[in-house]
Image 1 (cartoon, each protein chain N blue to C red):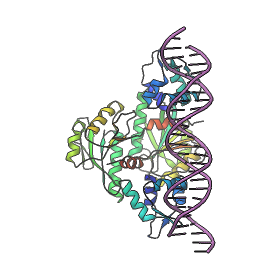
Image 2: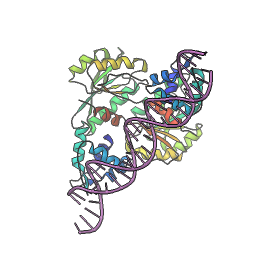
Image 3: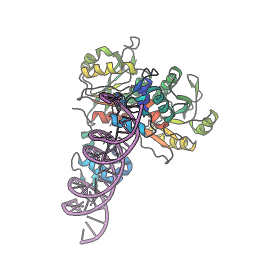
Image 4: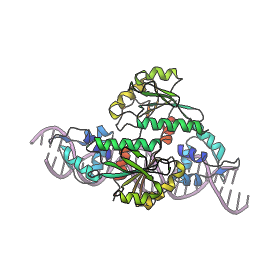
Length: 199
Length: 199
DNA sequence: TAGATTGTTAATCGATTAACAATC
DNA sequence: TAGATTGTTAATCGATTAACAATC
């Protein structure tokens, strides 16, 4: 679904712009039938014979993806990768009117880092995650960029703080309770994946 | 497959250590049947009644995943993310005896960056990708961490240089010829994905 | 031998695609 | 009206799981 929103965001949507499942599918790299099925899951947004009204569909997708409001994220583990993701998100949020992800808190366990800042955002101690998240007005999504050894422990803190969605970049398989959504991305697993097709 | 190798690497493999599809599946988060099917694709590595010999299976997996030799990677686009991935890989390669991915070249288009170094590795101009890759002894995998606007152009250079495997971190859908393996990872798409499950 | 676990085949499940009546 | 395209149902495809003979 997110890919459709991105495509619509990248398009010049005059008021009269309609887009067919055919065109949307081509741009997204999926079949027209797939597009129609995906969208039909959430309602009847299309008009037979013309397609989907661009502006309307975009608004609907934003609603469905919760991208019609600010989504508050925190980043835990401010090493190279954490720093990169932090800067990337701060910049996009400041620059792009439509980018809904706002970094609201940073955490690390290293006393030397605590108190230092990235842009205007201070790094806080990870063991105070729950209180800090509360104090800064709530966190929707946590991004974990700590070493593999610390990841499960950190994730448990995240769950305890009541955060319901997590993106994990530590190269390890993590356990979460049913009600928490976890997605893991793993650079070295991806590298193996493509390397496997060599020769 | 890569996940099985990681699990075996994390295990203390005495010579008498055998592991069953049951145990391997539990650790990987897949069914025993799935494990057996995956492994059987590449040969008969198991012994009925006992399971898979740890050391042997690990060696086989390394061979299959091409992880029994150094895999040479280059990183194109040395912004925050490129720098983070570079440092991460340089460090792992230097530290972990078994980590097969060696960063051998860095590229950027910014004249201010060209000639500067990360650790001992100099940043080279991206338009000389082909020659530089050749000169430094060949590149197996390219990692693209340039802005979305430049990604397709850079990928075309990568393909022209004869590189057969690419990891893309730019938030855009790229086109490659059939014979090139492309895998894309996308932080903001992942964020939308988990955010979608909020509430 | 009895118990365990493989590799593989058959059965199940889910996801993708094709097709088409409805309709703009 | 004729042409286009939707939403949905039926058909296809592929992937996962169950089951079991073979065998260590």
